[in-house]
Length: 182
Image (tube, rainbow, N blue to C red):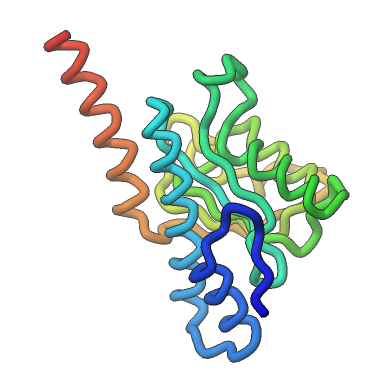
């Protein structure tokens, strides 16, 4: 029997178990699979007219947290996709320390989210597209060059870069068009 997280469809749960049991997927395909889950979260944000950014957190090849932007809906500046996913993962593990967890997010995290990622002890961060204006992993700030942090994270970007970038670009293009025509 396949155990899966509430809200996780059985195909994703089966994929997680196949990867864990048989290991026949290449790492690249596994990273892309998790990034596609983050893109699905981003699409949920877009349906709520939020900036479409999505995030999933994985431990031992199982999704333990997922989130998407809800800042406008909740009128709360901290409701970024990463923070939402961190909260759910911490609740699932009953621990604020998310040791040996991987975070997949469609757009490079901002400074606030990067701080929360470091504090939660996430091991690896995989992002889709850089954020040249606000990204705090490598773009506006290279977090691993900051001295005396209590935790360093492994960072890899560019996973499904075009898809992750395009969903945000298309969202803002629609917003601008609506504003002009509105």
